[in-house]
Image (cartoon, rainbow, N blue to C red; front, top):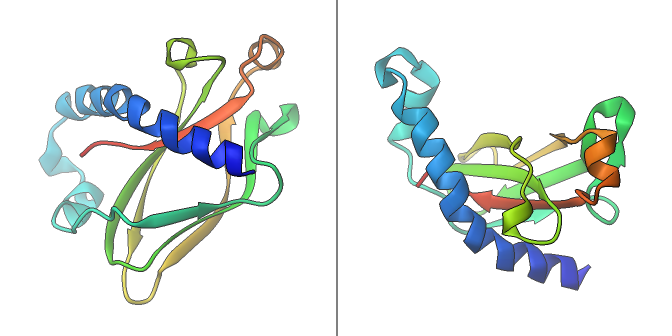
Length: 142
């Protein structure tokens, strides 16, 4: 478990630039004034001190659910603000990241200091059998 946490932390920094670039490209193409949800969180401070916990040994492949699944993923923060997380799948290195990822924006305020949910990162059986079985996460956007 500790090894996975260290691996997650180590690869998160490298993937930050990749995911940030993807998010910047996708964000740059639209009209920001049309999305009220984006405007609501735009003025909130970015949460930098947070924790991620999950049941079991991390993500597990479940074809019926459409990919690699984190059951009861809990993200918590003692600070208020907004946190953007991206979850992706890789094989051996950052050169082997699948193109699909899941991105979520969580807000923390006085009434909500944690969020618990199931998360499915899309992976086909063929990709899973080809070695794409390692879930990673990073903060993104910035």
